[in-house]
Length: 79
Image 1 (cartoon, rainbow, N blue to C red):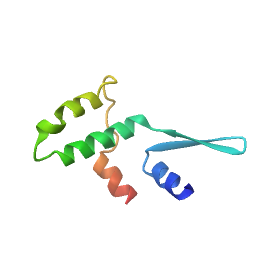
Image 2 (cartoon, rainbow, N blue to C red; image 1 turned 60 degrees about the horizontal axis):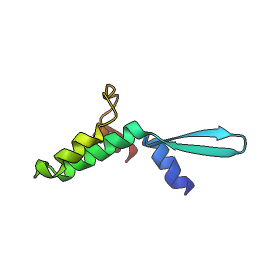
Image 3 (cartoon, rainbow, N blue to C red; image 1 turned 120 degrees about the horizontal axis):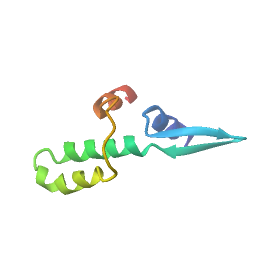
Image 4 (cartoon, rainbow, N blue to C red; image 1 turned 30 degrees about the horizontal axis):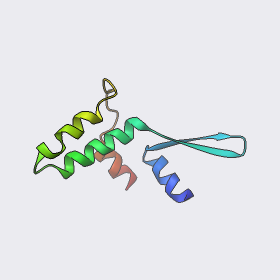
């Protein structure tokens, strides 16, 4: 499990913090939303009408912050 958590952290999908002798992991929802949107757009590239409603809902939490690194760049960096 530690290996997987380390890789998720390296990809920016989760963050860790130490609390005494414990390590607390938390999801990075902004990056996870970007990943889901990227996967949905890639998966539905031939028929965007399938994913359009879901992609619109993925941005439900307000205005998106300026992108620091594209998802494909993150995936390239992690791989």
